[in-house]
Amino acid sequence: MAGRMWLVVALMVAASSVSAQEYYGDFRPDAPELAARGPLAVGVRTMVVEHQDQLDILHASAEQPNPRYSRKLTLEIWYPARLAAGQQEHTVYTDVLGSGANDLGRPNTPFQFPGRAARDAAPAPGERYPLVIVSHGYPGSRLQMSYLTENLASKGYVVVAIDHAESTRADKAGFPSTLLNRRLDDLFVLDTVAAWARPGSGSFLSGMVDAENSALIGYSMGGYGALNAVGAGVSAAAVAYVPGGGLAVNQQGNPRYEAQRDARIKAVVAFAPWGGAHQVWDAAGLAGVRMPVLFISGDQDDVAGYRDGVLKLFEGAVHADRYLLTYVGGRHNSAPNPPSPASWSNFDDFMAYSEPVWDSRRINNINQHFVTAFLGIHLKQAALQAYLDLPPPQADGSIRQDPGLWKGFPKRAALGLEWRHLPPK
Image (tube, rainbow, N blue to C red; front, side):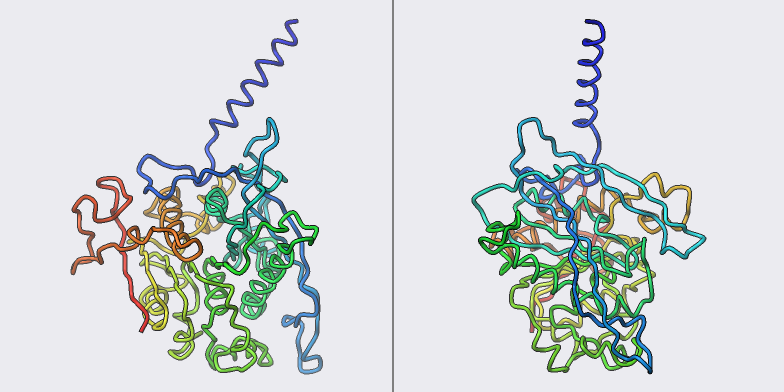
């Protein structure tokens, strides 16, 4: 009897520890309104797909200019779920630190962190949900923005995050692969999920995804790829970054590239997108973007650049309705989860996630708020425009302090931020 009582107590303690556990993306007391988790339970599954017969740019040479291979992409999929009796929204993700298998200063080190999603839960029946495709940095992983992917799924989206081959922390390889393949991976995953969504496909996503109503979210090189996927064709100068002219398939003015515009993509969120400071796009390339874009960046970004980088992209996408949220004093890490305690033993691993002057959990909540508003407007036609109709910075760059001017923010909480909006020409 005593043994049975001990077991009951142990199970109660375990259950309470799960419910009380902190998860990345949890709502802080000072979080803006739309950061709150949505009403739907969230499931998560891992899938592996292969994009066959792709150019193996890292092995191209004068003797073999067109080697082919199959790109294996691991996907993490979050979706509205129907939980079984006793099933909890709790999982454990396994990611990896480091910067590629051959970096002795930052060896690949697995680490785990909890997620607020039910592994392999049954999908919620009876509704079709917009699709959001998420693309990580270089290097990065499909799990590095779980605070946002879980949050969006709870609000009625199917969210698919990609591990881009040769671009994760585990398998980082030459940069030309990332330059060439980001757009191609994004569009392949969109086609793949659209096929899964068809009635009778046999997929758990059959009848559940509205792939005609999709968005791309990209961080750093993921932001580069997202912009490239929606009309920002790279410049002639950028084509030279990849040997043998392989990047011409992504070049502005190339008829093959122009023919691959995908009307299913309705909006883009670009966190600290790379390329503006590196002449990846000229004016004609940026003018090719004709859909709404939310840019998010720190004004001290020393990777993508700010005034010569993200701000330049924001101003140059003249045919897009675009917004720019700036974290004043922020560097490049405006998108990822907070740094795991596992990263604290290596400065470079820690700095790949952290911000020197911003609390990562605070950034996560602010991102949830604005991405919820932006995607709600463009994928769900939700009446959320007031959350984006914010006053621009004052002449000295500071925020106007009148209560209520930043809709959804608690009193005294809209600090350290700048907001800009430019309509399309």
